[in-house]
Image (cartoon, rainbow, N blue to C red):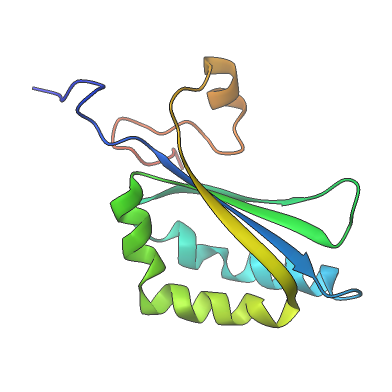
Length: 126
């Protein structure tokens, strides 16, 4: 029997705000794209996106969705995460992050994403 919606862990969203050193934005984007598999390869990761502020080209947001908080914390404390973070850190002048529990999303938002809607397995479709 499938657990009810109330019994299932709530998806967990992490939003990282990064201020990138002037003139290093393009290089940062390239390194992020080249290393994104580290995050996407974790079994608890549902997807991620890189966004740039439209009013400040040096400010970026990395948003990632996780099956649950425990899955994110497992990744956060892993050697893979520490190595991944060390590759992005040289471009960063400042930053912050916030975590959120996804309570509800409309069908339209889920389908439009930033990430594909998860399949029954909890993983996004390939």
